[in-house]
Amino acid sequence: MSASTELLETIELATGPKGSIPQAAVIWMHGLGADGHDFEAIVPELRLPPSLAVNFVFPNAPMQPVTINNGHVMRAWYDVAFGDLEGRSRRPDEAGVRASIAHIERLIEREVRRGVASERIAIAGFSQGGAIALATGLRHARRLAGIMALSTYLPLGESLPAEAAEANRQVPVFFAHGTADPVIPIEMANASVERLQALGYPVEWHEYRMPHSVHPQEVIDIRDWLVRVLAG
Image 1: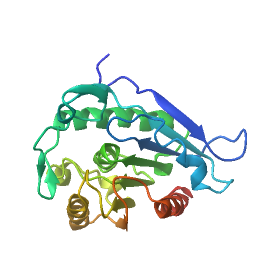
Image 2: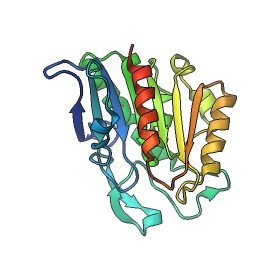
Image 3: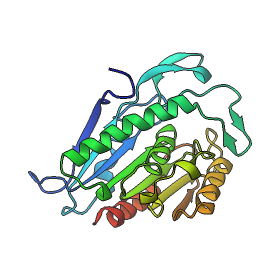
């Protein structure tokens, strides 16, 4: 089975009353070198309403060598090369991004087969994972609940106008970034938001006084956004 068609390993946590069947889902991708456990602890911190039964799915990215980390093998959604940062944008490893899109598409379809309507599935991610959330969600053929992009940027932006799915032209986008991020400069995030807004996407922008991390206020804002888009 090829890397683009096998189902990724996942960590899953369900909220809501004990024994309830989740009626919504969040597929949440970690950053470079982390794994599916990275955001597992945020689920109880979100303090979602007990009535909202959500299945949180945290996939493990494939293991692969990463050029910028001296070729060390680690979990990565795509390769990052030296010198790929160009001002307010980044040249993507297009093949790697598209392979990861295929992986996440399969996880979306699995949630649908489990009985969760696509419009109650949110795609989320941090850093590299956020890039894949954007790349996947904006191209997904069926309406999604929303896309959460944390400390990240838009990859494959040039091809988006031709590849964007009509079903998600008005999908809610939660875009958050730190003002002191040394890994992905906030200018890259701003440029991504400008591109999305120029294409008509309803982007909800949040910035926090933090580096490449998650801010306590951000957790509160994420909770409010999830309750809003998953309420259905």
